[in-house]
Length: 624
Image (cartoon, rainbow, N blue to C red; front, side, top):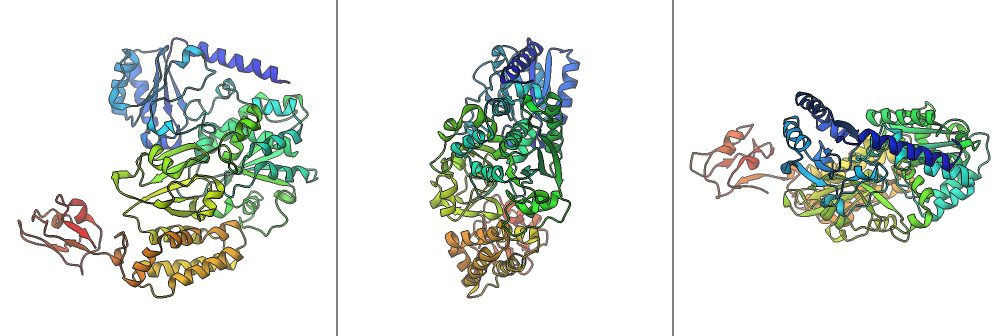
């Protein structure tokens, strides 16, 4: 393969072969990402195969795909009879399979109670060249899928399907029609910023590495994704691995690097498996390896499994880990673009950053720069977790407000409780209150508000959440994950955590808030790496917006959210009918009372587990 014309011919061939193979067939597409498998996708597939065999149905093709983002609806199963619109079923279990086979596959009748969405038309009639779009799912209406465009649509193990949808066209164009400097110029003009944390301009970072003179350079993908509640990169690697591989190869050409590493956490076995399969398929097809597209450019790629240390998300620690050393940050300068992996110029971007590159090269910088805000272009993928109705992945245009993401995409607060805060940016981010809901999601706005984009974790909290406890949770994580190399991070976070524990245990004292602020300032100013410098952010953000909760804990020995057990007690009100359910469900026999009369809780025995409140049908138990 030597040119764009050769690739176009291959694309047409792939489309024709897929269309011929699927012509007249019913497609059954099962979500086989980690979330789908955990929900029982393999068991559903087995039940489908058995049920189809029992009915002697042989005109069905069962395919796997990645996660489309609706994780809370897994197992997701799409059924598309030839010439008919594709229908997506959610929360499918093996016991549902019989109805799906007999009603939809055999008789063409949709099973309405399981439907979560439909595609507007029958894409099979058009061949495989078009990506189908959802039309009537609230979760998807506000979204704009670029990075996730193929996730939930293609078989991630099929190079043929990726090529049929335009795969490797960006690499072909870069190698056959553009100089390395032109590629970097396009990435600069696009406004693409790093999606892994700080949002540094990607094109500028590539330029620094390009300018370094050396006999060897490296391109590295940070696929470690250590933030609690973050799973954006995993879903891209599992659902569309070739997109990231292609982006890395383009980056290697632009910077003059011939070798690349994908640093993926070992806890992502499915992502690693699919990445390695994608690399092998790309090498066999000539998209990786020697003399790619006859350009003289060589690029080899391999996967390095990380041991799960959060600090290895920091680029200098990550490179230490690849070299076989203990993952610990080192001072900068020199920066990786000058002296990185094995002392050679190196560039590190994360999965989502590389996944944007090929489409920028194919469609142009102006197209990409036309989306988003002045300083934040394109889209961003978020992992929606916490007290939200629709958990999963959402990709929205930069500048979309937090309110739109939570209430339009995410469906609002679970159990219709009151919104309290959203934690954005992972352990390095911050908690934003209700007054900030209309803040646009972009790098600069979030920094000004005391948070950060981070990799894209978005944790929603309701009125039952204690913000002091939230700060403790994230600080506990960063303190335990500290590599210990520098004193401010190692010791400073430990002292901050001791203060937070004291406050939550009801032993807070005057001056604790000021001491937390002083320690946070010292750590931010003196910690060695970015992870240490941002570790105090959750504490500072909660102090900024929820200072009254800290003061209530310290001065009134009261937790306003009723979440801190040391500062909470359960009381049975006069609404009690004496049914005895609370008494029977109390694990420590702390409740007494006669049938038909108001019961009482012995606070000296109560362990504050909440079982009484959960089992009271009259809502007669209050938390004070």
